[in-house]
Image (cartoon, rainbow, N blue to C red):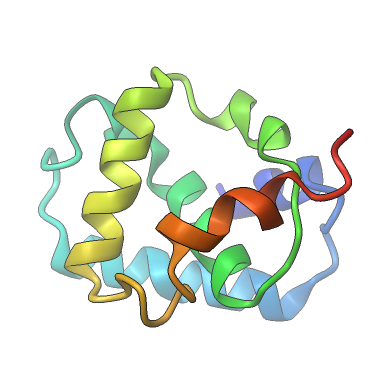
Length: 110
C-alpha cells in the first residue's frame, strides 16, 4: 500500500522513507483501533506516508496524495491530526506538522 503512494510522489526508491512510513503504519495499527479514524480509515497508509515525509523534512506536493485519499479534506485532516496526537508526534516528531507543514508541503508546486 505504501509503495504505490511513494511511486505517485516520485520517490519509489527512497528506502529510508519507505521504512519510516511502514514503521508509522505499524504503530498506527497497534495504537489506533480499527474504525477509530471513521471515514478516513482507508487512508492509514497515506497518513503514514505524509507523517514520514514531514518527520524527514521532505518537500512534497500534497496534490499527489489526493488519489490515495478517497475522503473529503476535512475527514482526512481530522484523521491526520488524531493520528499525530495518538502517536504522540504532535509538535515533536513531525516538527509541528500543523504549523510548519503548509509551507513545506506546497514548496515547488507552483
